[in-house]
Structure formats: structure tokens, C-alpha cells
Image 1 (cartoon, rainbow, N blue to C red):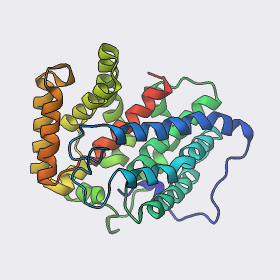
Image 2: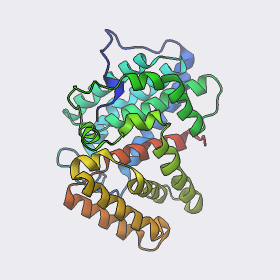
Image 3: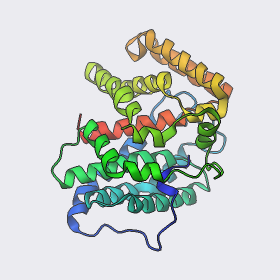
Image 4: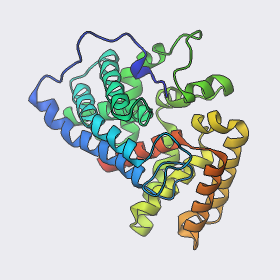
Length: 298
């Protein structure tokens, strides 16, 4: 997916965090980001998406592809958190994002595995770095507000011109169907993350103590509500409506708190595979929810 972290001209040199303090602040944030992406990858059942069980609706990637991508991105989340701790401007974050995308594509043979996370979790990691460096709380709403206040104007200004060719499937869908995509989510303060994904994640975790069930519930909440540009690209409005409707039925039947939930979740996974549908946007938001939850803020 094409994102504004890679839409401006590259600098001659990559930015480097400059002092020991930002590095100390950034290390745990970077680890939490990579762990969150792994937790999303390792989850099953996950309709149409790559997991340890199968490759979902994908023929060009599997779990090993994602693991190579994660390995290539390890330093990125630490570095962007350190840059955020130092008060970096958006151009600096953008340069880091561009280098991370290049490393990701080199590791995966040109396959886009984590471009959405490079953008969304990258911005949240930068905001978390700023908060940690200045003794501010890591609450979700506060992190979102920092992204909008510190970098929102530059994110909006970094939108590609209308004549530019789409750089990703998500951007094709955004142009074709008028969907907002990741940029709009960031500019609005990540409502899908904080209003849709995190509440069921925390509620089910509190009720069951089971991270797996909590993550599945959060994913289905996203599938039911999110205008997922990956689903739009692969299946058009009919494909999006199918997944949203099935996810709502799953939740209305009690979700992961109901008997037989796993059978119903696997059935939707198989239906998505049969239709070649993959909700990659929802997966990105789920990983971001795991990240914010791991930081411990509310």
C-alpha cells in the first residue's frame, strides 16, 4: 500500500538518532512493535490472511515471507521511535519509512508485506517515543493526538498528486471507490484502532485471559466495520459487503465467547480463500492495536 511515509523525495543520507537517551527510550518501543506484528501474523483463524496454518488467499507470500520482512524491519521501529523522541519533523520520519520499505522489499523479493505497518505503527512508535522522552502518558488517545498535532499537516500535504499513478492495491481501491485508507485514518486520529479494535481486544482479554480469542474478536470487529481497501481491491463493494456481513453475524452470535466460535471463524476463512479475499487493512489495524495495548496506555 502506498503511504505518505514514502511519497516525498529521498534525502541523501538516512537520519540517525543522535543521543543515548532517545535510544534507551526507543528500544522497548521498537521491540513492542515487532512483537505486535508477530502476534498478528501468528494468529489463526484469520479470514483470508497469512498465518502459520496456511497462506490464506495469497499465492505470492506465506509466513516465511512475513518473517523475513519482520527481520528486515527490526531496526526501523526502534529508529523511528528514537526520531520521535528527538522531535523529528515528518520529512525525517518519511526518510526512515522509505528506507524501511526498501529493506522490506529486498527481504521479500519485492512483495509488500508490511507497508501499512511501516506507516501506521511507524507514526504511533514515533509518537510513543516523544511521549516517553517527555514523561507523557502512553494512552491511546494521547498518542493519536500527538500524531495529528505534530505531523498531521505534513501527512495531508504529502498526498500524491491526482495525476500520479497508484502505487498499491489499496490506493487503486481508494481512488476507484472513494475509500479513505491509512492516510485518512491517521489524520482522523486512528478511529478504527481506538474505537473499533481496542475495546473488544481489552474486553475479551479481561473476561477470558486468552490473547488469541481477544485478537480474533478484535479482528472480526474490524472486519464488520472497516472499509478495507484490500477487500475493495480484490472483491469490489460486493466482496467488502460479504465479509462485513459475515463478520457481523459472527459477532451477533456471541463472537469468541460463544460455543463453536472457532468453527464459524474457520468457515469464514475458507469462504474468503474461495473468493480470493484478504482483509490486509484490517490486519494492519489489528497489529497496531496489539502494539498500543502492549505499551500499556489507555
